Image (cartoon, rainbow, N blue to C red; front, side, top):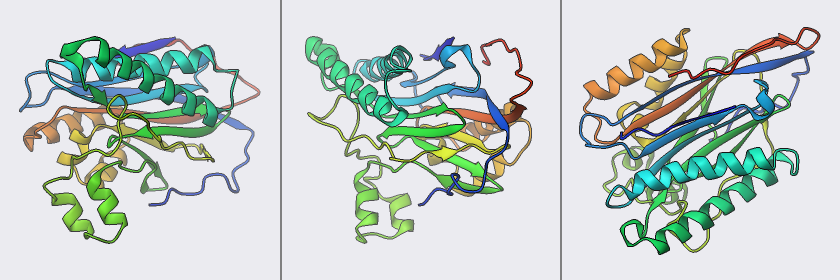
Length: 285
């Protein structure tokens, strides 16, 4: 079962240690994607799917497109479709890290080809931040400046690395963290699907084992442009996930965010393996 929405519209905690319970975690996904007060259409796309119709498995993506004549919207929706389809079709063929790597390279090639074949879509591109959850472990694939966060035990960690010029400057010691947040070139991307001859997506060699009450949060840059990391953490600490996203939308709009904003919130609930639950996929939005 899959769901696709496209409207017009640093170190992570080590989760692989000391967590071996006879439980698995079901994934519940909550989503928001809005044009925002300053734009006339939405170039973000969000998507998620439960491979094998099993809510212990999950694929989830946030993509933020770029390009003229609505090409950004095309690119982000293509990325979601291509990444989901490749992973679903090859779910059992490759280990998760290799599956993500191949999926990103395939999506990049297809988006490049589409841009070359249509003058109106020439040069289109998109970010893509994706999580793959299998056998109680979370793996990420990422390119661009959308983000993946993990909330665990009240602590927020960014799992993805921004592929931006200013983040490269920050990591090289050329600018401070405060300069990074306010730099006039903060949105200059070094990598994105479709925009460069080759890509090197971030696919960490190790995953993070899911713990009960973890939360994953995927978002486009419109979210963290409006909300600082502390704001995001405080929102994610609230219990009701639907209310979290309602508050996010209200705050982003009130702060007059200049971009589209989209997010996927993933909650985990432990289910005893001896008593498998029967669930139905449902459109959360």
